[in-house]
Each structure stands twice: as C-alpha cells, then as structure tokens.
Image (cartoon, rainbow, N blue to C red; front, side):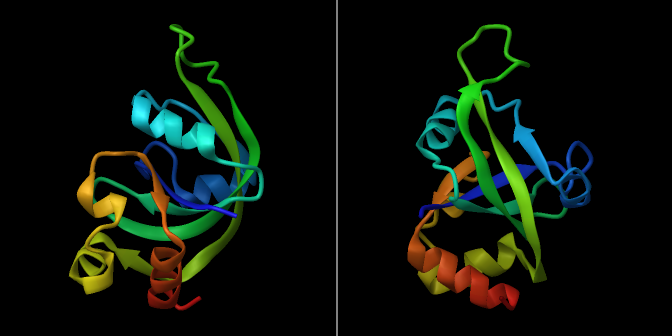
Length: 135
C-alpha cells in the first residue's frame, strides 16, 4: 500500500462533505504532476485529507476506491480522477506549521512543493503524522 496527501479548499469540498458523501470522485486536478500522482494510486491506498487555504491542516483519512479514469470536468481530455472513500477523521488535526516544524518532515512533498494538490507520502512520513494526529 502507498500513501498520499490530497488537498481541498474546505469552501469547495470539505472533510464534512466527503464524510456525508462517503465515496466521491476527486476531480478538477489540472496539474500534470498531481495527475501523474493520481495515476500511480492503487485501490486500497490511503491518503491524508488536507484542508488548504486558511486552515492548512490534515483533518481526515480517505482510501482510494477507484483507480485513475477520465475526469468528466476536463474538456481537454488530458486529466483524470480517482474515487476516494472517507475512512475516519484524525483525532487531532495536524497543521502545516507543525509539519514544517518537525525535523523528520522537512523533505515531505507537502513542504517542498506546497502548491501540489496531490502528493506522495512516504511510509515514515505517514507514521510520524499519524502519531502527531493521535492515531
């Protein structure tokens, strides 16, 4: 299993929206690197659900329910999407500031490429952040 982090603006699609829907497609990604990350996702992989913009914190965990397929919102046909299923909220949200302050998370894609909406998370990063969140 691989681990990921997916970002959403809570005013557009929040953790609460994801929980209410259960399983939903992750569409609207228009960055080639983020799209390539979604292409690498496999069913059963898990991802941190990150509220971007003002909150800047990890608030939940989702699971990839359907692998990469064409994004119906992309008129160009170049980008795809995956389906994700809400698994659970994190007991304590983990802020970007806390991640940046942790010496072992300095090379995390979220820190190095802050604008990337879908990024990989290493096994070690997953363990550290899970512990920080109280999981």
